[in-house]
Length: 187
Image 1 (cartoon, rainbow, N blue to C red):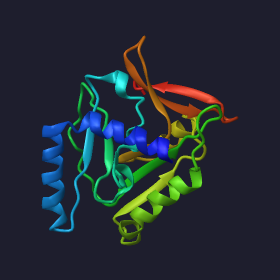
Image 2: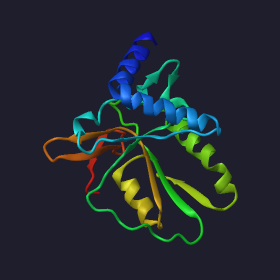
Image 3: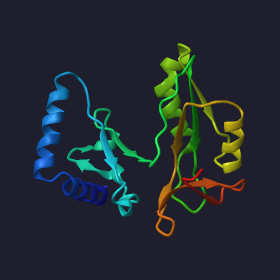
Image 4: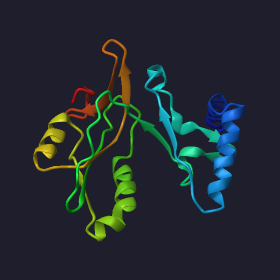
């Protein structure tokens, strides 16, 4: 635990240099008065070599930022082409997938799903949203789920990386035996 805290603290210090740290502290103080939070958005488009850094370890003693409700850490995927938002009639349909292939650090698939299901329970119960989970985490399963209907959100939990040869991000999916099957962002 001490090594993780030390690494997370060094990572925090590297990102939150003096001026940025002051902005961060000021923002935290402003939202605390209103029982709110701030979302830390990491845009790594111009630094793809940093995609594999475990940003979830950002540690501002005594807190892991990504574990606090008030300071979620979010990585964004910036695309060259952006579609206009679609009008949604009825409930928001969310397609979820948790990929934990062999040979990568294991994820607790059931727990990851449960976090999302619990967080979305109120809008689901009121009929505003629906969550559909891809069985397994294969490209075939994803294609089949997408063919079963229209979805507004795709929520992926799993490993990802950056392919320097193609200059593209990749998602790490599974085949039917839970072996690795990487998928480029051209999907």
